[in-house]
Length: 166
Image (cartoon, rainbow, N blue to C red):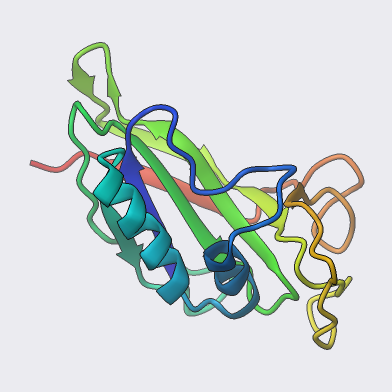
């Protein structure tokens, strides 16, 4: 499942180098977005986020899903996250994707997702048994195997394409 939000500048769903929220950790470990939706709903109540966004998950590692999102000129940024399954606590994210630039909505934009470790499980491989990190570590970018090459994840674990519809 893909989850996220349309938001104003300065609003974040995750903080790299900080401990993951309960919502980010649950999404990364299990794909369940209930707590993440509660966190986004709190941002909606604060006025910094337009709303919670949710789309289906992939059927396989090489599939594609399509879903609609809404942005406005007051809430021009999109942040989306999705679990890398199966994995201990890995996820992909696109953050602060600007879809309203210089008074115009972007027609078509493809963004490479960044692969992250939520810091809540010590597993080192896709099928590692649950080994919770206590205390939890900070969210960190994944660059090591099995996803990365020591420097980056190339090709990216996922891409997100935003297409304007009328």
